[in-house]
Amino acid sequence: MVFLSAVNFVRSRGPDEFWRKRKILKLSAHFIGRRRNCYSIAIRYVHRALVYATKGRKLKKFDMRNLWEARLTAACAQHEISYSTFRESLHRSDILLDRKTLADLACWEPYTFKALADIAKRKAVDDGLAGATDTQELDGIILRGTLRK
Image (cartoon, rainbow, N blue to C red; front, side, top):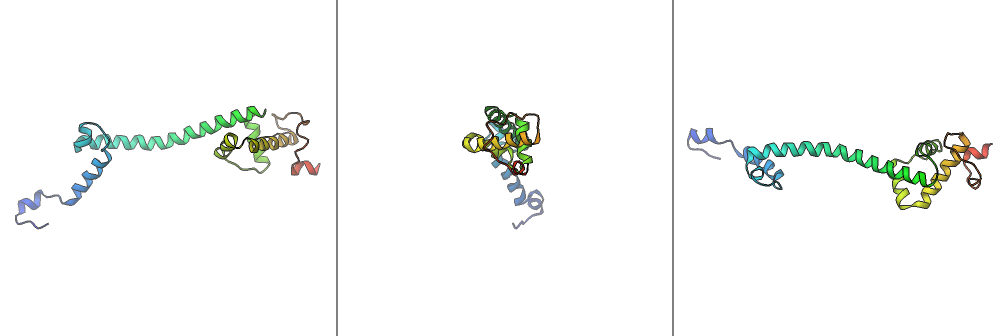
């Protein structure tokens, strides 16, 4: 920009101010009323919305973890094994699946989850864990530890 007088040079803040305000007004485009158009009001509501978005990302992780644990607890109850015994038995069997994967298996692959539950029950019986049941229905399941005995 070429200025012919010092007054216009002093008043001009350059293109940076335009793009800084433009960025805020783009973020406030879906707001209603003056908080959408007026920069001084929009900046307050945009900062507030960004704070909520940051908190929301953490809350989403927390909510998903609760959902997966609820699904796994229900699936474990269906197969007559407690959730804590199920997780401990899978860990001792070197089956290292996370909550999300186990919850997806419980929802969409019930036979696969039943096989995992049977493995967990067998390992619980072999290791003498608290949630262990009788071994009559588990005779067809052979683990590495079962073969050594």
